[in-house]
Amino acid sequence: MDLISIIVPVYGVEEYLDRCIKSLVNQKNVNIEIILVDDGAIDRSPQICDAWAKRDDRIKVIHKQNGGLSDARNMGIKIANGRYIAFVDSDDWIEQNLYRTLLDAINKTKSDIACCKIARVQANASNFRTEKLSGNYEIYSTNEAMYELIMDRKIQQVVWNKLYKREALENIWFEVGKYNEDEFWSYQVIGQARQVVVVDYIGYYYLQRSSSIMGSRYSARRLDAVEAKTLRQSYLEKFYPSLEFIGKINLLYTCLYHGQQVLKYMEKTDEKNAMDKLQKTFRSYRLKNKEILNLSWQDRTWFYIGEKNFKLTCYLRNLLKVGC
Image (tube, rainbow, N blue to C red; front, side, top):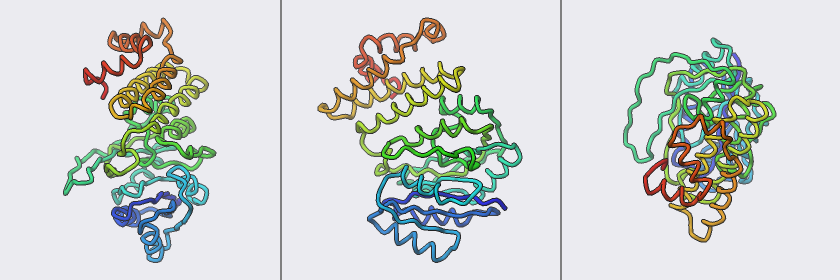
């Protein structure tokens, strides 16, 4: 049976780690190795990892200096032996049939990547329910999958609700030191996949907590998301020109969204530099006349005034509660 390598970066999650690992070791009807990458954690997480490794020989533990989420994932990829690769965040957990379901979908549809649906769970929720889904498949060509990724609809930017054939991510590494690391990585992997399958099945439970990276206070580092999308735009222009237009629209609205967040949450001392950077990016992707004709009047309005006065546009959108 083909081996699945499950890579789990671990840092500061002692409260949640047992639940995560238990959901992995209880996977049914699959051959797995679990790679726990202790990213220099200073709580009890390293000891919890080691205790699990003693109980289950499918578990490998790597202890390393803190280098961040991307560095930990890259380390896991380097030592993974599986034909298939999966990622799980250490405060989340998965259904016991997740990887059997995704592996079956890959084999039946001859796809390179399989995705499941996500249940988002609040940290303070005492109980929760998820709807029963059909388990049916939707199959996407590379071009179709890239479109869905840009739109963040049927295929999301996140890496952890998916199973990958190893060759789909060959020579693609996570950007070390970046926030929104998934957005730097996912479009490249989708671009290497010949076909992607999405299963109508909730298999991944994503814990939403305020102390996580994405739950923390807004800062200039969040602008990494804009950088990721400018790199993606260059990639689309080179390899997927038919998607260049929708990529540009998505990038422009990403600039506006982050401008709004800067005005709402960033310290005044840092605001100017952030807004200048966003405005420069916004104006660098000025729409051509023929592109403008394909827009709704609302889009035309926001992009027109955004080019004239970016900060005012973000202020107005906040005032009108648009795109918040």
